Image 1: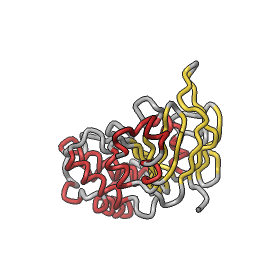
Image 2: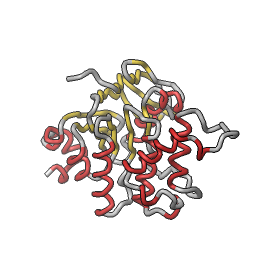
Image 3: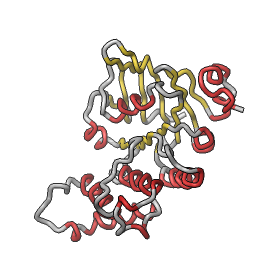
Image 4: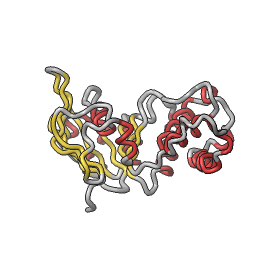
Length: 250
């Protein structure tokens, strides 16, 4: 097995007397789609916050490409090759799809504060935006206000903005939350396409999506990763069934 691209080593996170993450150990292999599942309140979003720099761990190391990123600010973590989306859609509703993506791409090129140059003349930026529009299947919606998109299209746009920094590792936090069955199928297919050749760490409650999308799954219960394995191994793990999956393992 390859060396992990993202590794959590004995990570703890406490808020006062509340211990949210307890001695978490997790290795994510380059190019895999790795899902984190667990009951509500297990600490999944906190784990993502730790990986992406929103929180610093109380103890432990978080390694990205072998270098410790624990405690770095989100912008620095992003520059080192990790990008994430959030549970709540995080886009600019009052501008077009194209402009949302262009702002994200300009940030990658450190052009967001270049006010004396017309954004329309930034040929490289615009070409990258066109490429992103194709990848997230929103070319026909390029000039539509983000607020006028369907919910699944807004999530697709946010995924596109996450891709704008060309990350090695993508973190998606419940990307299918609140979607219909048809929207879920569409978004799962899109995620499969856009993460080809990249590394994905995803939190998702829809077990049909998790078991069809992930190469490996880690189970987080009360802040502790109790098991990691292939979908088949997780389905058959007695401890996981008892702690979380129950009938869904059938």
